Amino acid sequence: MANRKDPMGIGLAVLNRIASSPAIDKLGLRKATERAVYQGAKGGFQAAGAAARTFKRVKGSGKPKRQSSAPDAGVFDLTPTEDQEMIVGVVREFAAEVLRPGAADADTATDTSKEVLAQTSEFGLTLLNIPESLGGLSEERSAVTGVLVAEALAEGDMGQAVACLAPAAVATAISLWGTDEQQQTYLPAFTGDDVPAAALVLAEPRALFDPFALQTTATKTADGYVLDGLKSAAVRGSEAELFVVGASLDGESRLFVVEASTSGVGVKADPGMGLRAAALSRLQLDGVTVPESALLGTADDYRECVRLSRLGWAALALGTGKAVLDYTSEYVKTREAFGEPIAHRQAVAFMVANIAIELEGMRLTTLRAASQAEQGMDIGRQVALARRLAGEHGMKIGTDGVQLLGGHGFVKEHPVERWYRDLRAVGLMEGAVLV
Image (cartoon, rainbow, N blue to C red):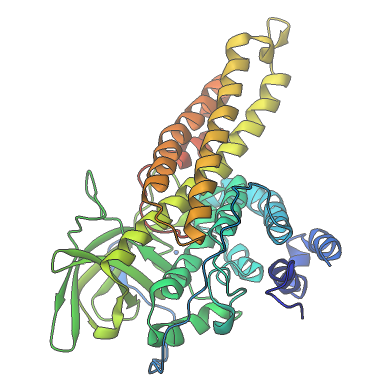
């Protein structure tokens, strides 16, 4: 096996996992994988936790394992490493050949195919931010790789991308801020072949939601905490076996690890305008009793969680925005009006050009924030910029895409209307993904 600390190590480790999976033949990825290896050498609230998985609690025995920050190279270089090129290349082909063709069906079904979800574990998505010593892929933090992977998946379909990335968000949170006990108890499930459905849930179903003014509460008891409240945007909530939930403890927003089988946990499907393939749900916490060990990280870690989640949403906007750009660019060159392609109309050409310009600005800002994150720097300002650009311009890109197709932009025969609906979510969502 390649030394994962060496150049190419992480990329080869991911590709070897994919290459050893017989399911890739069914998904049509055998050629893409072999080439990459060669070149790189689911009415009312119902009880959650239907799955029988039990997380065996392990007593902490030392300091938690953390990935190290990436070294400061002294320059801001947007060129992907060879590792990143290999990983993103395979993920992008998976998105194009599997997610994109199945996107309309997934949107209609308000769910992502279980077969598709099973295969994403082969990419090691849950492993990217888990230390190698805990079964992950690297001892070095790589938020940039997380952004690139999210972008590539969303280019196929944002809703399915969110469903695929949700377990990784929980694994990343526990890896970054968990105690040794939490890591030893939960992370092994995310490093094996049977990765559990899991969700990072911060949002609440109310207008003008502020992730730092939560109405969900955590009350301290003699031997733990009692959680009460209603959360929203739980990805695949009815199937999730583990949640990382945001709640207010003594006036501070904090994170808690909640097993779905815990008494008082309930889930209700809550499909929205967009991201339908992510099978979004509401999570009801009614007197949910958790032990002291369920508290995850500090108040500062919660703040960092919000930032890294917003960065993930910016990355998803990049991928879907790129899909809009590519599709509309080709459409305006082949769609004719008054005897010539509509791309010859200056207003049309300028609109397409503006999409490209907006995407470049979004991407530069997002990657810069990711680069600072993996170096352990304060990313508050940079994430705020990325969030503003992705929310505002991402929505505009979706609107312009529909406009460029005219009547065709309004019908489901073309995917632009779905991309428009998905991009509307970027400026509203909190939690769910994490890089």
